[in-house]
Structures are given as structure tokens and as C-alpha cells.
Length: 361
Image 1 (cartoon, rainbow, N blue to C red):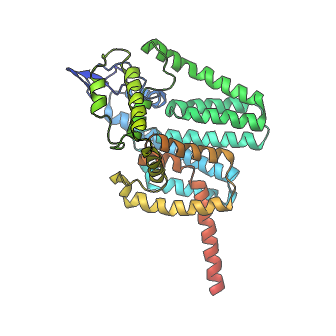
Image 2: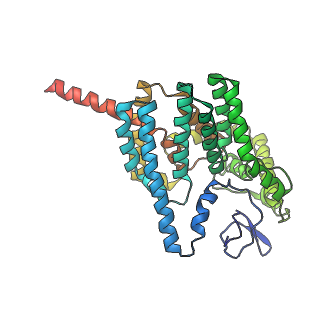
Image 3: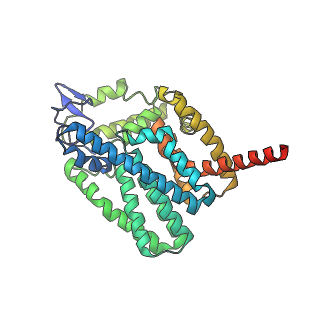
């Protein structure tokens, strides 16, 4: 908002709007965590828009090349060495990964840091590494939390994994470092809003989009509209609105408790298959590669033993889909963890096909 900070909501005449308006004075916000905004900030300071966009997209393309290297390293080290080059090539040419480098979203940054997270945590579980590696894991986890607030759940799971595998000392150091690193964001929110906001103020809206009868396209309903119209547009606006959304979700669940499980299954299928509610998911450059990758992934997983961190992240991604809602981008974010095992499946299928041809000849 033209140097006034980021917020979803702002007052416009006598109504509250969430459309972009460069002249708006937005309310104080914690709608999204600060990571991607911090990444964008140096580029926003460049007044020349064409130069700004070239540098920003160039930086994201460079990060995308790092992702290719990390996929190679992770596959070689923690999946199957022979499949590493195949996994890297898939990552480099997959259309949606290429598209993600040119989108103004944190997808590429998430890919980069979730791979670093998996590499470090898998290494800690496999080898008894020093406390410095725990510190590095805490830094990477903090970055993930600053990009996607729901990564806080991964932090809790990681502390349990470390405690089970490496004892309470390393788990405690990890948890303490993450808490210390995240404390400034919590303190900022308490000062700005006058009340505690631990993660973001978007959780209620995200829950509503996943639990209302109209699906994710509905950002409100008549009941909510009436309640939201009564909220004063002041510094506490976002936390109050978030609480109203959460309360409305509780009412919807109480009104029709049996609808939830069906919606959850549908959202999980949308995450792992194709989302029928989004026309972008019908693009052949999206559907066909994903169909082949998914089949290869199933074959690869059946021939390897995925490390616990990978299982944890994929299961947690699936749980989030069931609890909230699904967009094609969420599958893209998860897919970087699918590629290494799909590479194993593709190589094994190719090897069997070659053997079959040799037998025929």
C-alpha cells in the first residue's frame, strides 16, 4: 500500500475493502507472516518498476536453480543416489516449477527452505551431529514459519522427532532457539494490536473458506457480513475479525457436523489428485506431468523407505488440506518432496522396460 505497509483490509468510504488501493491507509496487519514481505522489501525500494521486476524475478530464478541443486543433493544423500540426476532434471523442467519462479508468491522460497529443513533433519537423525546443526535447523525452521505460519506445527513435530531420536537436550535447544527467534514477531503483534497474536490473523478466514457450504470461493456469508459490519475499523480490527470467523466456523460445524468429514476427504483428493474446482488445474501442462509423477511416486515409495522427516511433512501437508482449503499452488509447494521418489519410480520403470526389450530381442 504505497509505503503504508501490507494489510488485507482497509477502510474505503463507509465500507471495509480488501481490493488494492494505493491511496489506502490500511489497518495494522498480521494477515500474513513477515518472511516474503521482508524478501520483497529491497526490491520495493527500487522506484523503476521494470528494473524492480527484472531484479526480483531474476532473484527468484536464481533461487530456483538452487532448488534444483538441493533436490539433487537430497535425492543422492537420503533417497537413492542413482536417481539424483533424474530428480534434478524433473525439477528443472516441470512447468509449474518454472511458472513458480515468475510468480509473486513465496513458493520458490518455500521449496528452498523445506528442502534445507529435510536435509538437515534427515542428517541429524542419521548421524549424531553437533549442536551447531540443531542451531542451523532452528534458523531454517524460523524462516519457514516466517513464510508459512502453519509451519509452526512442523516445529512442534520436529521437536518431538529430535527428542525421540537425539534426546531431550537437542530438542530443548531447538525449541528454545525457535521461540527466541520468533518472539519479536509475537511482541510486535502484542504492541500493535494490544492483544496477543501468536501467528497471523488469517487463520479464521482460512478455516471459514474450508468449512462453509459454498467452498473456498466464499469469503463470508450473510451472518458474517452482519457481524463484520459492526466491527470498528481500528488497530484491533484484524484480530476481532479473525475471532468472528473462528466463531462462525464453530457454528457451521455444530449446524452440520457430518459435512466436515466429506469435505475433508474431498480436499485431500484435490491436493493429491486434481482440483476440480479450479480451471487452472485442467491445464494439460499441469495435469499430464502430475499424472505421470504421481504414478512414479507410488512406484518409487514402494521401492524405497522414505525418511521420517519426509513422511512427516507430507502427512502434515495433507492434514492442513483437510483442516483448511486447497489451491493448486499448495500441491506445487508439496510436489518438491514428491519428485525424488518419482525419480526412483521412473528409473525403475525405465529399467524394467529396457530389460523387457532385451528379452524380446
